[in-house]
Amino acid sequence: MSADELHLNLRNLSVDDYPAVRRLMDRVYDDIGGAWPESTISKLVKDFEAGQICIEDGNEIVGMALTVRVDYRKFRNPHTYDDLIGKRMQVLNNPKGDALYGLDVLIHPDYRGYRLGRRLYEARKDLCRQLNLQAVLAGGRIPGFQQHADEMTPQEYIERVGRREFHDPILSFQLSNDFQVKRVLRQYMPEDEKSQGYATLLEWSNIFYQPDTSPLNQPKTQVRVGVVQWQMREFHSVEDVLQQVEYFVDAVSDYQSDFVLFPEFFNAPLMGLTDSKQRMEAIRFLAQFTQRFRDEMLRMAVEYNINIITGSMPLIENERLYNITYLCRRDGTIEEQYKLHITPHEKWDWVIEGGDKLQVFDTDAGRVGILICYDVEFPELARLMAAQGLEILFVPFWTDTKNGFLRVRHCAQARAIENECYVVICGSVGNLPAVESLDVQYAQSAVFSPSDFSFPHDAVMSEATPNTEMILFSDLDLDRLKVIRNEGSVTNLKDRREELYTLRWCGPSDEKRS
Image (cartoon, rainbow, N blue to C red):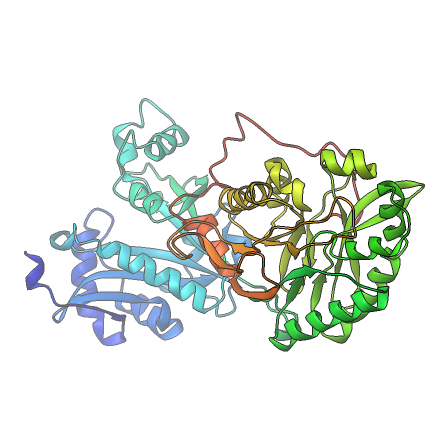
């Protein structure tokens, strides 16, 4: 049959379809008893019509998927086919079940080669997403096993099918449709002689599943970030700087942003207020204002209903100087992240030391992390964060030259690709003639994405005009990260060879660390 002769239609079964269903099942299942009774099919349709899907060519059903709802916790564990069957061959459908169970997928032999099975599987996955269920489960026959039963175990056979050394007409198809083998089921269907009674417990996980909670408590999947490309200028007081900060927070919040990011050392102009020409004394002078900036920006986060990443500021603890940033949540809570890797300039001119904690933070708009400038040039940090579910990485930076900026930019883009996350970078522009070591700035703030079909072709969500004070906005879809991590053209996180190499955090633990 040629493709131009087909007239295919995907729809749900009705109780009137039984004669066509019987013909198809008798043709496909002639080796295990043929068609199910009419009462079984009718009850399936009445109990769960949405789960009974067919493909018809003209008036004849040529493909079919039968499905019920089940309790995920029960059926992800060992079970048999009979656990799905009640009295008088009635398949048990649990209307409150939190998973789908694939009973059968049948394709007429004359229609194989047109990938109709894939259409039915995709329709079943769509149904799982629409109903917000955890997974699609299935007990998969392994009819090809009979040819190898004398020479290997079912586990060995399944592994070799997975490596494509053997082709199994059912298991190979299911693996190609993103199903994962969770366990071997014994005596699943004893009458299935080709499979020797064995089956695979297969699972396709719904990455969009959300447990039933109040809509107010559902995590956001559409997130807007605002980036302040800050102009360095002369300020005459702390109040002047805070007034400028509040102006930007107000402006960004007016656009319903979930986050606003400021650059590294954004309040450095205040060093111009000290008479000291010693760089160490100037940076320590600046550090005395950090607590006030922290408190005021936390107030702004609550008042303007926006999560603020404060850029970075110097902090004195036990007479030691650090470079720190704060996450001020709009619910009034606050987190901190120290810069871990200190540049030669910071080390020698200011005697700044590196922190020793790395965290990923839960927010009402995703799991986020912060790496200050130089830290983004060390790929291990972002990879450790990705292992904790990082979705958005914020990078406040300060660079004086274009080549310094490009180090930050290129490394940030690499972090987005290799960790399948969004990366937001934010720098300052302009000049500060009165401040030693910070007299010139170069920046082009930007938002980067992974590199795949569902993102911009150059993996740049948006970018600012170089060396111009401005606000940059970008809308981020966190669901796209779930898709690329599971079904992308490449899946960097999933494909790591952890049997060959591992990465672990050796620093101190932190009770707040996620």
